[in-house]
Length: 521
Image: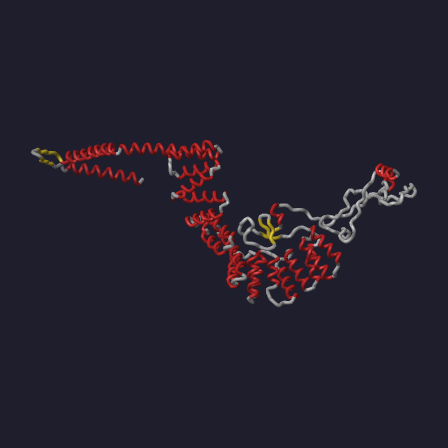
């Protein structure tokens, strides 16, 4: 609407100007080289306007003639660029389709038509990789690094090629260059971080993590930094105890549920006499992640305490999360040290129907310490051998007896407290008892008698008459439910304390007759 109003106002002003000039006619006289031209002001103005238009036309024609070589060259360059673009497009599509011949042909055509084009370099490198020509791929990636728009892409390609030929030094050098060129580049920062972690350079790893802070989520950054600080604290514990304690405390602030950091900080604070702060950190970590390392550190938070005082402390800690197996194990362990056997048994009682290995092993220790009953000790140790597993520090299928900041595959914060089989989702039901099945009556007359073993001797062997043969022993018949104990229950007659059950072999009558005939030959 505003534009329409402005257009109408402009037209009105122009019309008013023409009217104003028409109402005020005038004469214009031009004398030049003996000529005199007289005309009106309106005609002179129109003549000047016509001369300006003619001059503009002439100038446009002359400029077109002068620029015609450049325009022709631009036309051919544009046509060449379009052909190169089409060749690159065909090549990339051929790579996606797995057509190596067309990809290489298109790459050669693109290199001829569009030399130095970033997409052409990418097509050349990918087609070389597809053909197994690693040298050609590296040359293309090196060429990319010379151009600013494709520098990071070329570095990425060189990094992958270095990894393929297991050249760690080259991969590290390329990753550092890429991280320096673009600190927020995720793959470069991660590569530098992994390299620092593999070299146990925890301060360098912290610096690398700070450089890639912008590429990480806040929670992920805090967790990784807490893990690296814990690793640094563990490395400095025998070198600089103050620096180790400071690193552990910072790790606890960043990751309150990180068990190694909380346990380490609690122990170091307890050593320095700050039991109140150590208890606060360990209590908070226990509520977030109950773990035996937390319980062990909390039990020794005050040096010089008696075993009964540690038991009271463990009961208080376990009471914060009732029904937790870790709390019951901590109480039972402290009660065993205090020789409060009834308390230890009561703590483990809810878990004896389906004990884990730690529960069964601890029950064996209780039996040995309280009664010295070797039979019950062997019974519980047998149950421990067949019991379900307990959580351990595991990562990538590798089990460790202690927490490590980096897994065997170089993954930071890879070790988790879990049951190893839980990583692959395999679980087995645990049976503690199986009701015995009543055996069916056996007709002993149908069971053939097993002959006595014959020992080689110098005296002649006299055959036994039918009346002198020993009475046949009953042969057990397999019941519908086998009379065996479940894998996790040794039972009182599991054979751990006594001799194994003799294996009964059924001997055919024909085999017995043949052996008797050979005796008289």
